[in-house]
Image 1: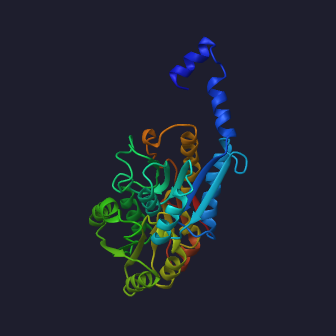
Image 2: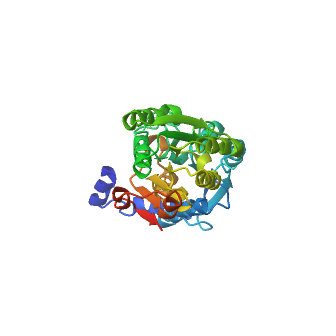
Image 3: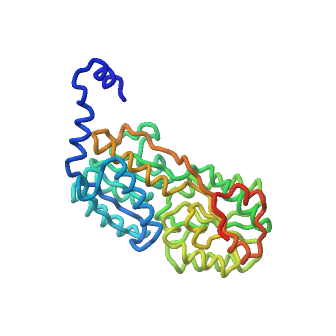
Length: 331
């Protein structure tokens, strides 16, 4: 409670004031727009959105009673993201939830006034969304999904679970993850020098390029794959997982769902937790706070998921150091 509200309570004047305002605000119908960078049929996308809506419900915002929610889906396609960003802005919502960096970029282009709360953005400062993490400064704030330094951890995990790896390709789409080279690559390069691994940046834009990169990497022994923090990688995970298996390539990813769906190992922020936490910022904005004054939040929960079925298919023995620290082991 703010100090002036505390003093008001102590003095006995307008005892129910702040609480009455909150009640009135939640009784009035408000409009929240959501732009997702996934396909609508994606089970993980549905789970993420459910975390957000459940978080709002716990804070008193019930769809159909005091909340109207407009959701659009743009599965890894920047053209659809821009189209739906304009469409949602034209609805004049009270606040917009943005999933991923390219979605936030599309919404930033579409409005400079409607509050935007982002979830799962890698480099909000470098991407130009906020002036700083502590003082965003405009109409955008939210929840970051990764710190660049974690890249070294991914490469270390890859060489720990697959010691024969001598070449590692970082697969990403520069259109949806433009921050990769500036925000993530320097940490990868430091780790690669320390681990004596040759690092290759592998930009891709479509299924054909994904296929070409992974197939070429698997033609020689000693190859490994690193799936970058990238909306495009998540949307195309089925293809990437199947190609890595076919090419006998060990791979490490950021997103837990990729390991659950058949990838070898993932380590990164708990995306479902981020979506649930993002409801708190939407709630605060609906109650009158400004996004410019809400600091960007960093991840507080991380998950390591290892898929023993995939390890067995790759003829890898998962070391105890990974098994003992994994949050999920898929057998």
